[in-house]
Amino acid sequence: MINQWIATPKRTKAILETYGFSFKKSLGQNFIIDVNILKNIIQKAGIDERSGAVEIGPGIGALTEQLAVSAEKVIAYEIDQRLLPILNDTLSRYGNIEIINEDILKANVADMLKSRFKPSQPIYVVANLPYYITTPILMKLLREDLPAASLTVMIQKEVAERMAAKPNTKSYGSLSIAVQYYTEAKVVMNVPKSVFMPPPNVDSSVLKLTRREKAPVHVVDEDFFFDMVQACFAQRRKTLRNNLIRHFESAADNRTISNGLKQAGIDETRRGESLDMEEFAELANTFYKIVKSGA
Image (tube, rainbow, N blue to C red):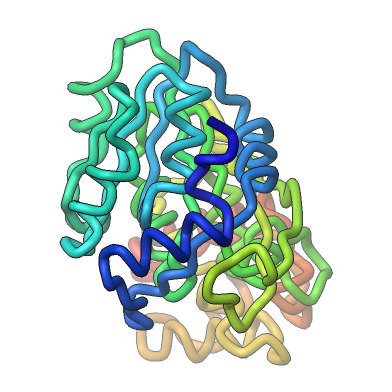
């Protein structure tokens, strides 16, 4: 059976030729052709025979197949209708896979998980995500509060580093805060371009996002908190004070902004990259009260 794995150069080429499949650049299609990489991803995700697995963008089924071997049940979302007959063929030997032809950004994933998996079943998202749409997909899944223990995803290396970055580093920014508010983020492996067909133009990493039981900080209003974080990184070389003056414009004058930073206990000459999440929460909560009170 090992010789029949989808994730080999020979088998992948044969499948593509059989169906006359051509890659769509607009969908960011890069298929993995190394079984060991896939097995390593699944091992890092912590999947076993009791697990439910959710995949996004199965392609011709390389990762889907390995998930089916390891997990109890696999649900895979595929937006490209051309791939449906290929998946029906390549995965026909497995009875524990369901392919859903739907755009993951429009799908009600939370309801699907509740209807397809057992209430006590551990659920994991595992995917080789299209690089052009990585962040919208992950933020949708994180903000929907899915009953999934973790998300283990292959993404562009630079983006993975940004999501897992710590304060006072070049990669640290609003995306780091957004992801780490919901999860503990860790880059668990790097992946060479050579294991893809066709090879992507960028390096790849596998990022594991483990869901937090509760947010690590208390914020009065989540939307306001995330807006404040983005504002502080709007122009990285500018100070917090200058970025916030630009952000609030007519909603708060310069003196009010200086007073707000003082109330939050944060030096107005600092830059966004120097603040940790607790400091961002204090900043957002302070300014939320100021803005809402009209002070």
